[in-house]
Image (cartoon, rainbow, N blue to C red; front, side, top):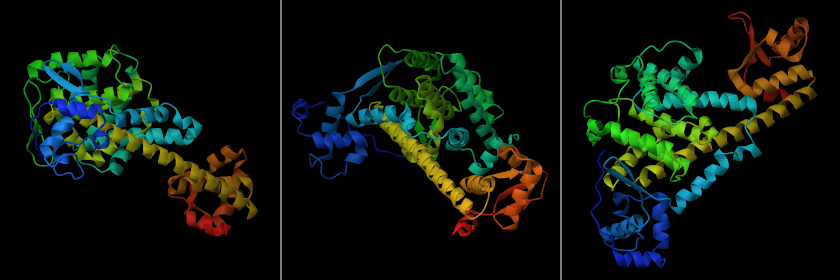
Length: 432
């Protein structure tokens, strides 16, 4: 993936004075939100100057005046909190730290969604790194508990174990031992297993997944222990406060940049991103899949790394991408909640209307429940009897009546027999 390196520029004092006076406020606000790179700005219209290099010089003068620098080994990285970033961080703090309490996901739905989110993250994080299996096949493996059949399935299985592992030490400081164990779990029983248990001992090149060209040359392997030591200190220290979401994004980027392992760096980076936010109290992060959004925007993900490296190690490219990612993932959670609340309201309405059609409350409640779950759920005679606290004879009478009038079907393929919904349309037509 080729992107053009930006031209070299120097800070212009006259631009600093104009910025201080608010002369280019609209342009700079827009640049903060989209965080323009050189090739975004090069052909952009409605900009202060006709010459693209002058526009870039103005933008870099503004950014350099705001940069906060952090050092890892001999490498310096820059970032700043723009108004766009600050607004989104505030929004996330309200939502990820408790905004759902006013209109929460119900406990039963939350359990299902949490389980599915963990599976989704395990699958998607591996697919980002090239795991070649469908999401449905991977989900079936994880839910059924069967053993992985190939390298791709093993990657996904390992990812789920790693996500579960990070929960065990979310209250601990990070150190080499935890990072190496996390990587060992990530690479177990795969080709990458031979390089687990220690940082790499040779130089590597990061190859672009699209065109096969070298996208990044990580630091010399002899620097890794120093860099990872600095990273651990950065993670564990609260001396200079950095908002947790910004800090988690920087951690994510730096694992990719340092590339401490021969393989498995991306999966390790995303696991540490999750771990750090859990450590800082962002418990709802467990209910969203960051990697699914990354998979859906893979080109932007790769470009966020490259733009940061090409433009003076400006971390705001990656921070901005990461924030947008979290927002998309969180919106999926909100949409899920709203969908479930809507379905529950409709299921309650269905149950009420079925009572008016002469069914007893047990039958109406069962059909309302099955309507809510659609075709994904069945019940046995014993389960129905236990739920409604009736004897088997009464339970059998209820279910046989529903089968006779064509509202449910009886599956005799295996014992105990299962009873399930034909489809939602059948129920809807019955109550009309």
